[in-house]
Image (tube, rainbow, N blue to C red; front, side):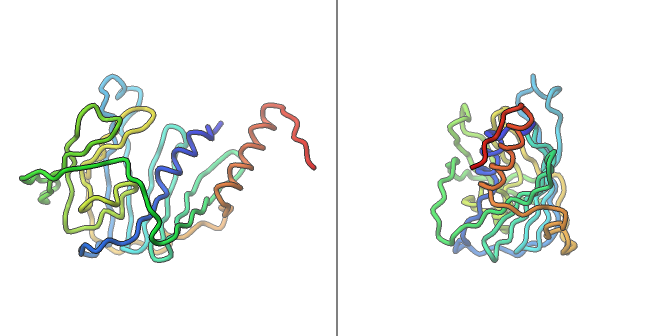
Length: 226
């Protein structure tokens, strides 16, 4: 059974698209692979490490991820049209949940940061350092980023000064470490960025209504129709 409250938190967390900043970045087309590991060692046996895969041609982005609440899901972001889809498989249907945003919409970020001197290497690439604060972090954590690439490929970190390659995300389960383990410059298959024909396109509100009806029927609650 899908937990709708967790789903609401997830969609609010992932489906944000920010406007372009004035900073100049190199175009990147290819594939990024991150390992995702919970930082609490006592939970690592219960919550095994997994991967997050990002494909992009610099204007379209596909993010493949797995969560404990929702299982496997895909986010497709159309930056030119300021639009995103969350693809989910549920017991009643395959859904493409659409969310549109207006240019210039104010976005409140949960992270604040200060820059640090010095560099560190990840995959042979020179990454710069940030000390990042979040209300759920006991103390600031060190993030690493590549200044030549835009942060727009990574959800909720679009206000950072470059592409995060080592970062941490706070969730209901704890804090997860995301570490870049592979970077490949290539031209992804354009079909990766499309919505499959067997997915039902819905708004977030319509999706919630259908899932609530399904839960009520599963629990034997009679639904009144006007």
